[in-house]
Amino acid sequence: MPIHEELAAELREAMRAHDRRRMDVIRQVETEVARARTEPGFHGEVDDALYRRVIAAYVKKMDKARLEFVAAGERGRPQADKLAFEIEYLKRWQAQTLDEDATRALVRAAIAELGTADPKMSGRVIGQVMKAGAGTVDGSLVNRLVREELSG
Image (cartoon, rainbow, N blue to C red):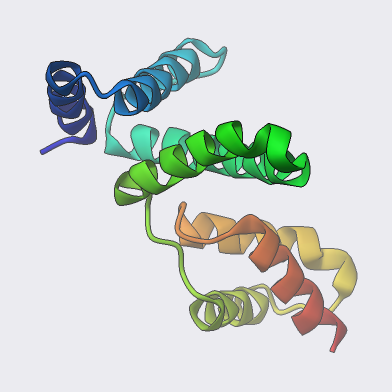
């Protein structure tokens, strides 16, 4: 079942159960998808890949906000708990990211393919890995691994 249909079914179920937290997170994801569709330069279909990209970006943004609320202490606890719920709830629709070993293998393959050992070429290597990983690699991990491989 496509993600948008799953979310619609989840929303109906949440509305019947009067589950405000689930309704809020599903509606927010739908809003983020609508925003992504109306951005200049968007060409393509509304498919699972779009939903996965939007959900990944939303989860990343909410995780960053959650950390700030946690740092605020007791005052930020209710909001941090709400964001933690949203992050956990959306995990089932997130694309699984590769672990460090698999990402390192992609980095080494990209370095071999490009035939470079120059740290100045790290941008090209990162681009190659991100393209090969197609949403399954973590950008910050790729950046760190490329710098390690090219410097050492």
